[in-house]
Image 1 (tube, one colour):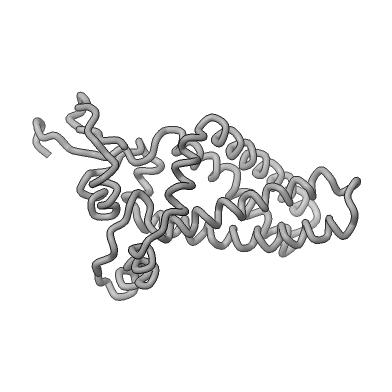
Image 2 (cartoon, rainbow, N blue to C red; image 1 turned 180 degrees about the vertical axis):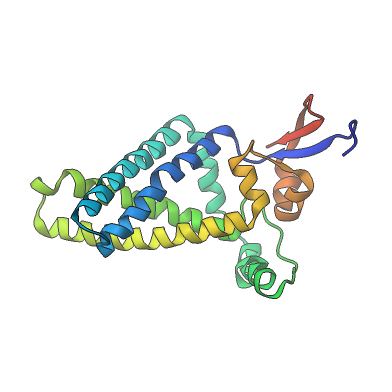
Length: 229
C-alpha cells in the first residue's frame, strides 16, 4: 500500500462486544470442555474433582459476563436480538445452499449466495440457539449447584437431564462455530483484533449491512478511514 493511500475499513464489532467474546472464551469453553469430562467420567476421582472446580469457575465467568454485558450494553443486546429474529426469503435461500460453505470447502468452488446483513443466516441460527440454550444452561446449572438440598428430587433430576442435553448440544454447536470462525479468518481477526474489517471484505460478506447501515466518521492518522454503523 502506498504511504498516502487511505485504506477504508468498517468498524464491525465494538469494544464491548469483543470483550464479551473474550469472556465467553474464558468462561463457556472451559465449562463446556469440563462438562464433557464430567459427563463421560474421564480420569480418576482427583481429576474429576478438578474438572468440576474448573466447570464452576467457567460457569461463574460465563454468567457474570452475560449479566454485565446485558446491563451495561442493553442497546447492543437489543440490536443483536433484532438481527437474529429478522428473517426473509434471502435467509431461506442462504440456508438451502449452506451459505456456499459446502461448495467452497469440499469442491473448491465459490458460488453466489443471497446478500446478507451484518450477520448471515447461519449466525442467526447460532444466535437463537445461544440465546435460549445459554439461558437454560445457566438456570439449570445454578439450580444444580445451589438448590439441591432444598429442591424436590424429581425437580433436580429433570434439571440435571436438561442441563446435560443442552450442554451437549451447545458444546458441539460452539465447536462448529469456532471451526467456521477460524475458517473465515478475516472475520476471526475482526472479532479478536481491533474490531475493524476491510470495506471490500465487508461488501463481499455483508453487502446489505454495508449499503444501508454504515457511514464514514473519521480519518485516522494511520491512513485508515473508519466506518461505523
